[in-house]
Image 1 (cartoon, helix red, strand yellow):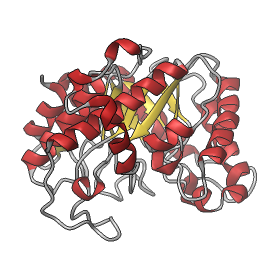
Image 2 (tube, rainbow, N blue to C red):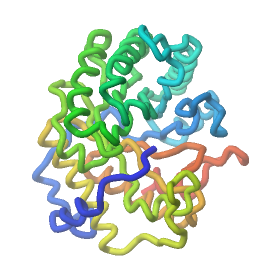
Image 3 (cartoon, helix red, strand yellow):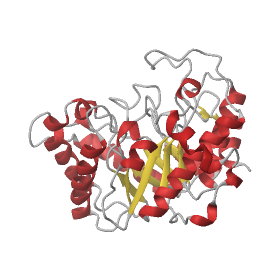
Image 4 (spheres, rainbow, N blue to C red):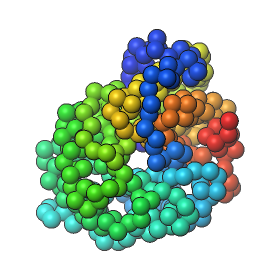
Length: 336
């Protein structure tokens, strides 16, 4: 999950290209390559925590079956690798952590789901990239080797939400190096590639993705941040509560961003994935649902796959205490 998405200025600049409804988009001018990921759910708060369960959620096999039965085709598995790896060469990752990732993959595959495995929350890399490149590359070599025999349903995502000193230019260079490492072990597997600015669309539009026939481009969107993160305890500072969303101009911003993403995907010749979007759980449910539906529809109407953040933690679509879907959010994601 990101702290802040692309600036509203990008969307406002693009509004003239889109208009307030998705039907206004010049769809005939572009063809977005088909994505292997259409409807995806992020398993946030589990393996992205320092230890699974620290943030109140541990992945259960029945959760994966529930997600599949609802109509999703993919889960995204955010994984914190760096806290489970040695600080010095050879930067060995703990075997039990690798085994747990493999276990979730096996359970997801058995449920009929694809799994996107990423590298999440490597904060030291973001603030001191030069000092951590060697460790990053070593970790990805181990991940790629460990998952070499994983089923075809597994998709690899190189780096979640580069930020701080990981600029677009640095991220382009790192993506190219990481992709070359992954391709040694996975010559034909789908790989997800994003850019800097917390995975923002504006950074992706300024990036130069690697030359490869099996990559999926990705961006994350929580715009407007003051709406989606209002009252969130982890924000610094939390945006004030009471903000509402849903004006014609706000719909136009969402559609303009999706239009820009689709155009970039068409130009680059790669599928596009909206890899994270969601609204904090304490925002009124009707407002959460309205925004979520608008984001999902804007992506789907332009052939962009999507992955909701998240299943059962602070942006939840599923209530673990009641062991049932939050109907309004499920409907916003899956119903017409």
